[in-house]
View 1 (cartoon, rainbow, N blue to C red):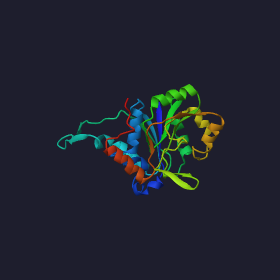
View 2: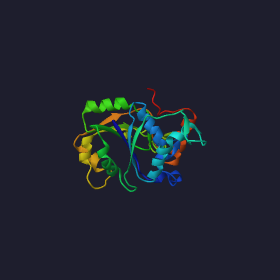
View 3: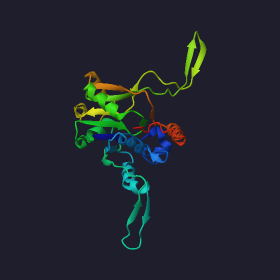
View 4: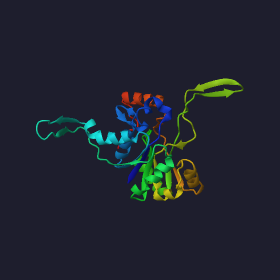
Length: 256
């Protein structure tokens, strides 16, 4: 089953980093966010990826072209046939299709362009900036049980602000960035190929008319995930996740 990952946005809220490289290549623990996302899926046996690149997409192409020598020790034999001898420490069993979907294309337009690369009736779909310990196999099982075109992973985000509890005009308590009760789409979706019928020929945001029409037709299920989830939108998010990594709290790493 293919895993489609959106990697083409400009990441304008993280300009400190994305001025020089695409957001999915911003590093967590010395490895790109995109690498971490792919490791989440591969830990559950999903190793076929379709990357929808756009803004600075050539850097993502170059990263995977160079990944083998970047991540392993090797000896260069310059006397004779000039071959490289790898002393393998790390080897990913990934199949990666990289599709240039345009630097200005919206999320629905990017997804529409990779339809021809989807071989099975179902595929995974996510964003190139979210990390989670969601159980991908349980998510897929839930999707198949509900029998809908799509399944979203519903998560409870952390409020970016502290919350006040007020009674009769008096502050009773102050909660520092609590977890909100309402759920949002955390990515990590499973979609049936019928979803392409909901994507118009013109460019669009997947999160607008396509999702609204799927919901209207009662074709979206929601898998409620109560574990770890983070969207890496700002430089503060990058710093926070790197602190977790440095402390050995690799919360998005599968235990399977």
